[in-house]
Length: 431
Image (cartoon, rainbow, N blue to C red; front, side, top):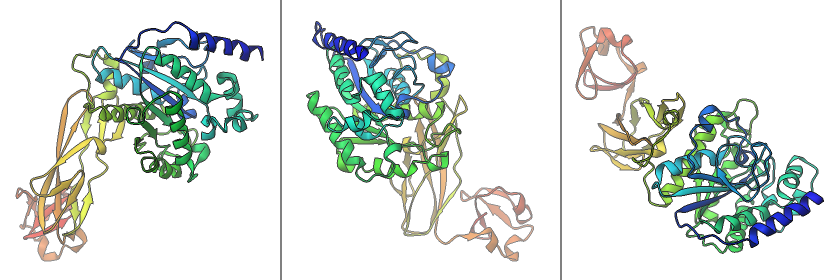
C-alpha cells in the first residue's frame, strides 16, 4: 500500500510539473499488449550495441537493473518495457525508424505490456476483473503498473506529450483471447478510449497491430490471426503487421525468437513509414553501426522456380525470400515490386489470357538502399509434365531448349537437366 501511495505521488508530480516546449520532431509511439510486446527473447550483443540516442524510451515503471525512474526518458537499450522483459516488438521498430527518418527527428516509445494478459486488462471500464486476479498477469499488473495498466499508459502518454507528438499506437496481443470473434471490437473500444482521453485524432494516430506466431513456426495461437486481419474492417485506421516467416523460440508455442522480434519490429516501422509516405530505406546520411548492417543488408535474393498457369486464370507470385548478411532468412514478397512486358500485373498477381511463355521481373530494394532483381519465367497454357514425355520426345539427338530459345542439351541429357520449363520437339514440358 505504501508503495502504491508513493507511486501515486510520483505520478502527480510528473503530471503537474513544469511544461517543456513540445518538439514537433519528437515522434512518440504508444505500445501495449502482452508478453510478445514486453519482449521474451534474451537480447544479444547486436541488440545492445550502438543503440542511437535518438531512439528513446519513457520508463513506465521503475527499474532496478538497469536503474531507471518512471516518467523519465532514456536511450532505448533493452529491456525497454519492464525489468523482467527482453527483446520485443518496439526495439527494432525504433532502431529502424531513426535510421530512416531525417537526422533531426527523435523517436520515443511509451510501452506498457503484461505477459499473459487478456485484452480487457487495457479496458478502462473492465480492467479490475483481470488486474485483481491472483494469476501471473494480475500480479504483474499490480507489481509494475499499480493495478491499472490502462491508466499507466495514459498517464505516461500525457508526460510524453509535454515534449513530443504522438504519431501512432503499436499493439501485439491475442494469445489469451485466441480466436475470440469479439476481439476486434474490444480493441476498437480501447483504441477509441485512448484517442479520447489524450485528445488525439484517428487520422493522425493510426493503430499498428501484429500477427501472432504462425503455425509453420510452431505457433499455437495462429488461428487468432484471422481476428487480427479483421481489424482494418472494424478500425479504418488500423494496419496489420504480418508475422510470415518470423521464427519462434522453439521452446514454447507463443513467443518469437530474437530474429523474429527483429523482423517484426522492422515491419512495424515499415508500416509506420509508409503511412507517412516515406520510403522504407535508410537515410543516406545515417551512420549505422557495422554490426547492425548485417541484419538489414540482403546477401541473396533467393531464386524462384518457374511458374505455370492455365490460360485465362490468375496466380499470385509468393514465397519470395531473401537471405541477409547475418544469415537470417525471411519472406520479402510484400516488399517486392513486380513488372512485366508479357503479362498484366496487379501487385504480385499475374493475369493471363492466352498461351504464352513470358517473364516477370521481381525487384527488391533492401533497407540499405541496394536494389536486387530476378526474372521469373511464367508459362501459360496446357503444359506437359515430365511423366508425360513420350519415347519419341526423348530421342538422344533431340535438342532441348529453354523458354528463351537457348539450347541446353539433347534428349540423352534429359535426366541430368535441372527442374524447370523446357521446349522439346516443339512442346512445352515442365520437368
